[in-house]
Every structure is written in structure tokens, then in C-alpha cells.
Length: 196
Length: 332
Image (cartoon, rainbow over the protein chains, first blue to last red):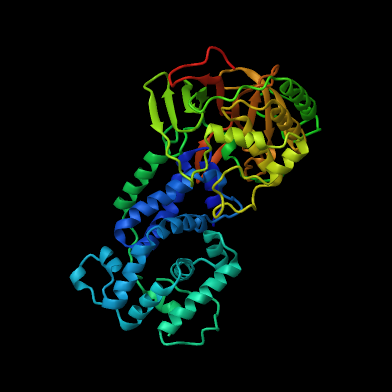
């Protein structure tokens, strides 16, 4: 971060006085958030959820805790609540992927559907495991896997203590590992770099 | 097989949106969030700077009980800092002698007429709000133009209280200044706050000042004992300052109450702006708000507000009426 560049907290503080400043936050984080939502729910819901996330964020501007310089956990937390409303559709897609190898979420953003190959066996097992998780455990697992957040940031996003992040992740990974043929489920090492 | 690594590969080809799509989305948000009044809220609310000001940045100048300001005088040269306790004690004495207003009926409307002057705006905007006491409907008019109305659906997720609910909240508040202060230091004011608003950043004093200011800014009959307690509680917050000759948007000179500890500072530690609750100098009734920009506010090289400019609002009338469109006979 250079001196010339304001961090998110400064942008938020300014946006309280001048709503136009809020667009800086959008430009910074909307592309990656959009991609994350697309990955969770598919292309067709991403615009609505990202739009609503920023509107909610705008409405709650006054309550942003400016001691947190990076607004992403806060934004992803708002988005997680909106994604949660579509959890049945989300699980349905994992179930279909597990059964048929066809991922309707991936197809929603693929430019040439006919060119797609069906998912491998490991991904199908994994998708099956995702349907077995509670919504809370799945939320933690996917946020850990599909963002570069630390456990602390995941905790801030979801409004839960970091110990709860660890225990939910542990619970979730026990199931994903079992589905993949089992490693020692009690050994939860620190999160690896899992970027897509 | 590492499950996290495998999961990282799942849908890893999900694309980020292209520029045109982002532009459309940005416009959608701008349209919904920027126009006045902020229509995304359940209630249209008169512009409220202090309601939003939560940032606690920089050091807190201990001005309460100090006769001279620690920072250089603001650009508004005619304001004079005075002993906060003396003025606030007097305000409390006057406020507690007021007669308590009658509670409106559920089907009556709270009327409020506000003028708002943005920095760089030549002519102020006149806004009128009618809100049914039970919160079921609201009407709004700007610059005497067309009336806009909307019904308000109850939404448990929303944090704007209906006037009746807010009155009940105010009625439950302690009227002992110490008890009130203790209460608001633990009150974030907003109902929805759980997951996205950790208690951390805002200091207890900044929060107390903000929340008490929001109470004063309600379009409701204020219980006199509570109003007095608010003034006495202000006097107990270190760093609360009082300036004389602070002008509201109607150019009425009043008393400005402010708390610098909750405001933004620039890289050199100078206060970027000071925001006031403005009270009538004789009756201590709420007049409006004022924000003086003491330094250029610069974001990414762009000046958002210039040193020497200001924002101000002024409440011109308020009262209880029978239907939207009606105005009270006199300031109540």
C-alpha cells in the first residue's frame, strides 16, 4: 500500500460524507466478489447478489468498523448472508455434479457448453461431500478454499470467533476427506494456499 | 489427496465479470444509493451526518473544561469556544422545565421540514417529511414539488424504528445522566449490527456522543427529563466542546456542540472536519447540524471537500398533523 492510496477504511470514512467515494470500494472489490459468487451459485445470480451486497454495505456504511483496513471480510460476510438464501439451489448443483458429473454452475459461465468435459471422479466425490455439510460448515470451508482470507478474516466475515472457524473447518474437512478416501481426520494442518 | 487443493480446483475457471458488465452493475448501485433521499432505507430520513459518524481516528483533544481549543481556530472565525459544562448545565435546566408533549395517535403524522445546504450548492434544498406515527406510511416533498408517498412494509432486518417504536425506546432510557451515559456507551444504536459491526473501533466516548446526538435528532416529542439528561451526559464526556455563533442552514446563529475525538484527521493529525449539533442559544431547542471542513479532504488525489466549505441543515418546523400535506400551525 502506497501513501497515495487510501485503504478501505479511509474510503469508507469518506464515503460517509460523500457517497461518490463509495464507488472506489466497488471498483476494488466487485470483480473478485463477483467471481466468488459465480463460483458458488453460477453466473445468473452473481449480478443480483453483488449488487445487493454493495447496497447493503452502503446502507451500513456508518457502522463499518474502520479499525479494519481491508473491507473484504465485511463485504464477503454480507454476501454470505445473501448466498445463504440460495443454499438449496447451491446444494442441488453439488448433488447433480456428484451424481452426473455435470456441473450446472460451471456451465452457467462456460462460453461453449459442448466443449466442456464432465468432472473427474474426485471432484464428484468432493461435490457429494459438500451436500453433506451443514450450511455453516460449508460456508467456512468454501471461504477458506476460495478466498485468500486468513482464519481471522473468515471469522470476521461470518461474525464468529476464530476458534469456531477452526472447529467448523475441522468438521467440514473430516467429511471431505472421508469422501475422498480418507486421511487421518483429526489432523487439521494450517490452511494451504488454495487459490483457483 | 489434499481435499483443500482439490476444492481449490473446483470451478477455478469461474471468470471475473467484464468491464461492460461491471459498469452496468456500478450504475445500478449508484442509482439506488446516491439520490436524495436515500430511498433504500425503510424510512426517508433527513440527512444525518452524526448518525453516520462513527470513526474514531486520531487523538482526542480534551476540551471539556479547557477554555481554549488545543487546535488552531476553525476557519469559521465568528465561532467562539466556551466552557462546555456551563452551557450544557444551563441547557439541561431549561430543557427539564419544558412541558412534555402528548403522545400522538397511531394514525397521526409526524411532520418535519428541513433545509439542507451542501457545500458548493448555491441554493439550499427544502425537504418535508410526513411519517405516520405507527410507521406504516411516509410521504416526502422536495422544494415544494410533487408529493411522493410510500407504504412501509415491516422488515425485521431493518434498523429504522417507526416513530412510535422510537418513542418507546426513548421512554425506557434512564434519565440519570451517569446511567444514561453508561447505557449509550454500550449501545450501538442500530438494531442490525451483529455480524458486520464488531465493537472495536469506536471509542466509548465517541459512541456516547454519536448515539446521544442521534436521539436529539429524532422527529419526536422528546421527554424533557431525557433531554436534560442528554445535555448533562454531554458535559460528562471528555472532549465535548461547545462553540457559540455556529450557523445552521437557515443562517440562524446558535450553540454548536461537537466532539472532535470521533472525527477524521489528516496525515498531519489535523482535524479534517468538525461536525456540530446546533441548538438555539436561548431555548436550547434543536436547530440543525453543521459540518465545517477545516482541511481539504483528499481521496486518491481527488478533493472531496475543500477547506473552508461547509454542510449545514436546519429544522424549520416540526409537529403532529392529521394527514400528509398538512403542516402544523406553529413550531411545536
